[in-house]
Amino acid sequence: MKHIAGMGLTTLAALAALAGCSASSGPTYTVTQTSLPGHPNAYRVACGGVFGKYDTCTKIAARVCGDRAVETLERAADYRGDGRRSEPSSLTFDCAATQNAAQSDQ
Image 1 (spheres, rainbow, N blue to C red):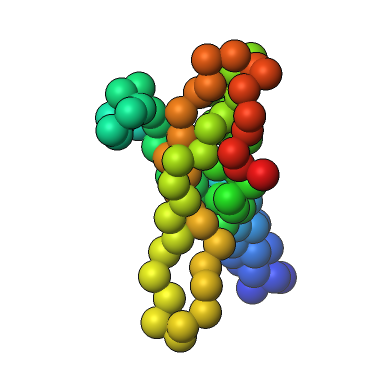
Image 2: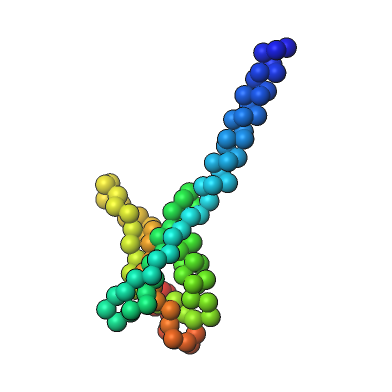
């Protein structure tokens, strides 16, 4: 019986550790302000984590720009040694002056 109780505690501890990992491995991102020629107030968002896809970067860019359109300036992907293309993991963008400005991300 003592062995079974010990296994229960071990299983419980393992499940708690997995729950902590899955909670902290959601989409993560960092946003930095940068300056490019013609775009003195540009931003760069880098997306990471297990669920940090390019879609996350575009959503964060939209949040930063608020009611203004996102103007994509550059997309960057991580290097892959196998020659296949990676999904972009960072986005450099500027916020258009008005919502009616053309959105170049499409």
